[in-house]
Amino acid sequence: MGEESWLNGTAEEIKQVKESITGQYLSGKKQIPVPKKRRKQIKSKVIEVVGAVENNLKNISVKFPLGVFNCVTGVSGSRKINFS
Image (cartoon, rainbow, N blue to C red; front, side, top):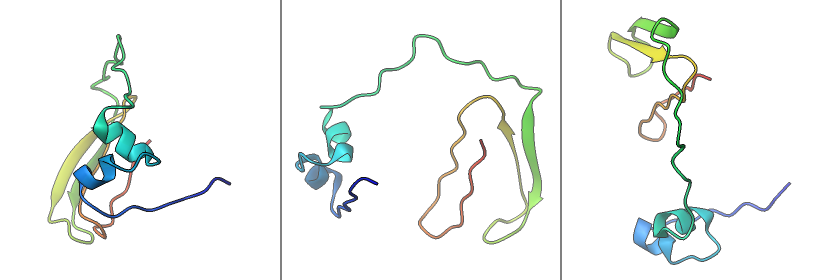
């Protein structure tokens, strides 16, 4: 296994840490190119969550398209899950 290191600070502070991969992306030294061709969402293929009320959700309904990258974000400790 590789080494792990954790940083704490503002984005500006992390940009200054040359060993930080995150800092290299934040500073623009590293980049991920935008694909020339993107996958198209197939609207008929979705995972649908209806009336979710667990944890801190209050009767939320949402559709997640399949075949594309989905990202659910939230504050630390908010029990997020991801779909592949």
